[in-house]
Image (tube, rainbow, N blue to C red):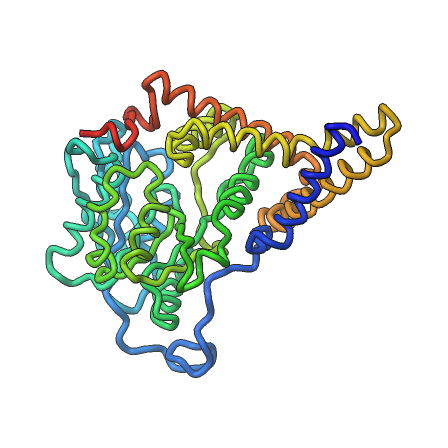
Length: 399
């Protein structure tokens, strides 16, 4: 057999492994765990009478465009216990803090405190510096038992907080995180966004993350419910102050300290941030892609090669097999492409998208390959992980 045929067979073997051996990452059935029958708050049972206190911490930098669609949903939380929203205006230049106060006056609901931490100290990323300030405000009275860390672009259904706390208490979880359903409205969003969650789940299979004794750990930063005691035990956010991919670093810190974590897809938590064009989506991915590879050129090379073999080889092999009349090459390429598309179908269904996008996954993967290379190039040019006017160096280079 030719070299291309062997590579196509290798891609097929890789997809058989991904289908069966990578924690069934492609399935979308990992949702917020239900309360066990007979436990307080279970369907048909009595509601618990002692709901824990919760501080909702929202780091926000130049978020005036999305705040009207997200903040009212937090203020309107139907939560039986004490809860308060702490929005941290992280040096915004668009009146984010003022707008937050106006929205609170207009909509009422949960009390809102707006704070400002000033510029980050050396060694801190901006978001974690804001989270640190928000946690300090929230725990000043030693009242909050749980912290809900949620981004300024995340909208919650009225019962979101109640269900998060219910799941944490019923299952003894220290961290409960939901991957918010991202906006999918434009053509580029349809092509890129579902794949973003698909690739994340492939890197961090939710079933493996949720094993209590496993080494896998991850979270989705848009919605993280965290026990205050677990945060203190893990030393966060101080212990992860340099992290660019802060949600994964947070989950790792909690799990290393003996905490129990859970990660799954959301049904009632949505991102309202628009990414209408390829440029916005490109920046979203490339700002942290090389950080995900620990700024390691060898890992970059292996990732690019892996993406090329696993995602790009199948359609190339199929087309080459048709053109040259080599049935083995055609069959290997076609089988690998079919498996690839099949694993993508559940995520497209979750996002309520047409299944015709499934065969286009190689094109999407090629775009992600280019974004990853661009992320590395930006790092080598000294622009690192840039976001909203800030650029972060690799942790080892930070004072």
